[in-house]
Length: 620
Image (tube, rainbow, N blue to C red; front, top):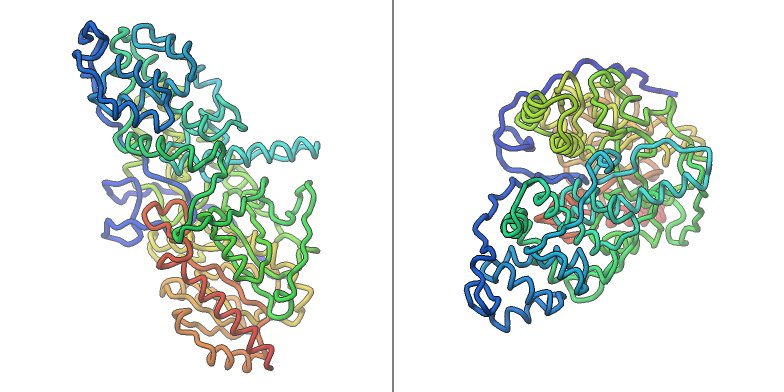
């Protein structure tokens, strides 16, 4: 069985390309930025200037209002409609006035987080600020999370029930963190709120806790007089976050309905069908997983040739996977986080009609943790960076200014650095999948290291610039995961298979079949990116003896051409592919339009071509 066992990892070097931003663009010499894969990474906002000019007690008039001016009734009613008690609104306006709507809203959110009753109002006024104290950061767990894909990276124990409970809890935590990130909070803020309130806390409680924690942190970091607390503490959020808080305060109850699974109306006015993701995200079964395996019965329309395999991001907008399922013969999706198979997270959904029994993983098994993958990095890894897995590997990476700022902060700090520096560095390292390559020196993963983590042969993408290599790899399959699913084909097709490969990218499916020892007699590959086609062709010419036919665009493949290929090869044994996730991924904040988006609508071409293949094979 062909195997690529060469996994030597040469020394890394830090990217030196100058950039004024914290990312590298998808094309050299361009500032245009486009996310093409699943990741949840989001550039952090610069801290806003604080407002120290909010009125203090000296400006209060005899009637209790700031500057003697009573607020308009409509203003009070507006805040009441947002869900704040009238007495809380009145008390807050008396304390800081109503001239700064942002500061007033922040104060109301804080009071809401601290409690709605009269005692809370009385005990937390600016004349006697008694905000709750958050324990020192040493007692909070910021390490065992990685944004989009948090499981803590811990090994399974011998206790089955304990392992299942751990995975369930970490998956619940993962869901909450990503929901909070979608609302604009940072991973650190989300993780702190969950630590304080617990994994089972309602999402709205976590939102309020973050607001209160931000205020508390600022207040306790300064020796402020009573009247300064409100003026300084309640202007501690950035401008963008203020706008988000105003909007979220209006929509929170409607959107979440007291929980994280509230319904969101679709564009046509009807409620979109939600398909909750499983906890843990281990598919129908995984090698070494001690939990129960799932069984399924395929709908009648899904049986028969050809076998097909469809992949896309798990965290798609509501209704997307339900729609994909309806189009693909009502087959239950298999959601898998590659974190359970390798050292990097990659949450994907798969719909296929392959058997699910008698699967087998690729051998040798890939490394499951960062230190297993890159043991030489351990000597430089600070003890306070307790990551054990990488976040989802993206199409872009951190630029030199990011790593330079990290080095500057650490070099100017003691050992260990202050908690604030540790938190900043951990956030950047998790966000950009940075590794430690020297004293106080963090660097992005090199392309050949991403190849290794994704299961590709060494130098698979070599020969192209780094920007293109990152983009191609970020849009690829995780080979070990896909190979585990495709392993059932090995005994079914001992003489080889014919494959129709849609949206081929750099050949993740083909590499998986090759590593499984399955001979590809013919592959018809459809891939629009010229660089990706060159990468696939180069690999194919070095490793394969079968026929490779390359087509540029799925839209150009019509029924008559499909029928001619079916006739030429006697049908296709496997139709495999994953349509673009540009409009599905959570990182695409501006064009997350679902299956109706410009790129992700190509799913319908996958369905069209699959149906055409089935029809042509039925008429053979």
